[in-house]
Image (cartoon, rainbow, N blue to C red; front, side, top):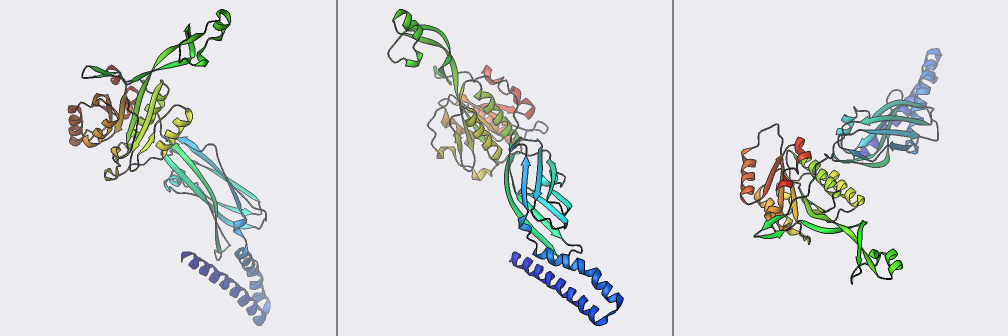
Length: 403
C-alpha cells in the first residue's frame, strides 16, 4: 500500500513536470516575444533534467562497505568506509546516502555520520567514512545503504536501497582474574573431589616396564632398541577440575556485568587445565559441554555477545533438559539468588557445598532487603555466596580457593 502511494506520488510529480514543460512551450508559442521565450529557455534545462532523473536507473549504483574487523570488544570503536560506484556518469546533484543499521542508537553513537550528503556530479565513485564509538555488547546488523537523489527544486525525489548486509559481533569485556581451582569438599566423611587426574603427554618424567593397556604411543622405543625390553614413558599427572559455569539470563540491573564475569571466568578457567562446561539459562537453555579449544571458546563468546535478558517468567527450568555430566563444582553467576533457581543448579553436583554463587551487584547503591533475604536463605541451605561488584571481579576466586 505504501509502495503504491509512493509510485502514485512519483507519477503525479512526473506528470506535473511534463505538463509544466508543455504549458511554458505553448505560452511562448502563442504569446511570442523575447520575454516568453526567455522564460521557456531558462526553465527547459531544469525541466529536462527532472524528466531524465525520473527515468535514471538508480539501482545500477553499486556499494561496498569496508570494516577492519567484524568482531569488537564492548565499548570499542568501529571504523566503516562506504564506497558507491556507478558505470554511467549522469550528473546527480543532491544525493543522500545512509548506512542503515537495525539498531538506531548506533547512528547516534556515530554522531549521525552514517548519513552522508554530497553532490555526485559526473564522478563515478564516491566514498565516506564514519566511526561508531562505544559499541554496546551484542549482535549488530547493518542491512544496506539507502540512496536518495533529488533535482534542483525537489520536484523529483528518487530512492533506492542497496542490500549490503553485514553483522558485527561485540564481545563482552573480560577482566584478568587470579583464578584458582575450587578446592575439594567433603560430604559425610567421604571426599567428593571436583578434580580428575590427566596426564601431560608433552613431558616425560621417566620410564617403567610396559604393562598391558599402555598405549603404543607411550612406548619408549630408544630403550627397546637398546635393551630389547618394552618400556613405557611416565608422564606428569596434573589436576583437572570438572567445572560448570552457569549464567542466569533473567532480567537484572547488573545483567551486563554478569555476562562480563561469566566471560572472564570461562576465559581464565579454560587456560588452567580445567574441564569446563558452560550453561546459559534463559528462555532456551544453551549448553556448551566441552571447552577444550580456541574454537569452542569462541563459540561461547559468540553466545555471550548475542545473549539478551529475559523476563523471569520466561525462564526455562534447568530440570527440563538432560545434561549427563556431573560436575565437581558449579559456579553460578546471577543477580538474584532466589532459592528455586539456586536449587535447580544443585542437580549438577553431588554436594551442595560445591555450588559457588557469585551475586553481582552495583556497589554504588545499597543492597536491597529482598536481595539480602535471598542471600541469607541460600547460605542457610549450605550454598556459598559471594557478593561482587565489577571492581572485585579480578579477586573473585581468592576467597573461594581457601574454602
